Amino acid sequence: MKTHSIAIIKGDGIGHAVIDSAWEVLQTVAKGSGFALEGTALPWSCAHYKDTGAMMPADGIDTLRRFDAILLGAVGWPAEVPDSVSLHGLLLPIRKAFDQYANVRPHRLLPGVEGPLRRGGFDILCVRENTEGEYAGAGGRVHQGTAQEVAVETGIFTRMGVERILRFAFAQARARRGKLASVTKSNAQKHSMVFWDEITRQLAAEHPDVEVTSYHVDAMAARMVTNPDSLDVVVASNLFGDILTDLGAAIQGGLGFAASANLNPSRNAPSMFEPVHGSAPDIAHLGIANPIAAIWSGAMMLEHLGEKAAADQVMAALSATTARGVGTVPGKDRTDVITAAVLSALS
Image (cartoon, rainbow, N blue to C red; front, side, top):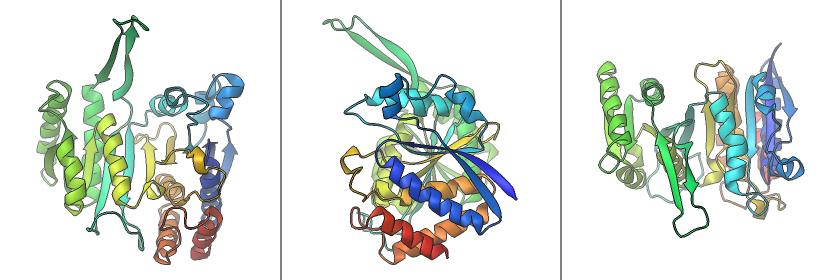
């Protein structure tokens, strides 16, 4: 029997509940599909930071390297640890160390879910550059605490980084409906975003079968609201992709439905799968966190591991669950009720 080794980082807050739910679903489908998932729980979190002074141990990256994939819950507890510490101490180091340069987030309405738009029927795949750009961490502060204080945050755009995320997005468009929307702000950012647009045009010439349209990020934000069904694959920089995918989550019914994959397309290091939502400390003790985004992320993990039939089963079970009205309204159904409904649909 084939076995996939999975590092499980539940993180903080509702991350524990939604990952427990997702793991139960994933184990169930694995048993019925002829493969095994071997999970190893790693207690890296804001609580770990408070105990040790680090979000993960010094050898954390080496520890993760031996796994086939990473399943992450949610990280953050702003009242206890600044978000800048938790993000730069765990998520960003993992993404960069394992060259998880493609952040992929699907946006569509599951059956029975009503989004805030009058439109339905959209199916958008957002591809976000995940290792450089505006989140590269380049910059600094001088004269701190004085009236002359200066803060500089430098976006880093390399030809290799921009070209590879665009090539990845072109491949996704070819596998879907053949349409690619490239998002920049080149009218205002005349260096990095003009550079991105130039590379987009160069690669478009290599992909004549893909319909390519370039949008400014503000125009794309409007289009995702007014005409989302016109979009197929959307590719953007780290910052713009981050913002647009939260808008995508909103139109698909909320963060409880927003799944994501941090992919290393070359597969020479593990990829990481996580729901987009945060740790939600305010509801962590109430048992009402929606596990659908975590389960959907788990399905994306299965597909990446080569278990597409099992991934399809999970997605079918999620669709059957929401079609019955379970898990469709934030806070209406308890986490365990939604989990039980998905497990029942699997059987």
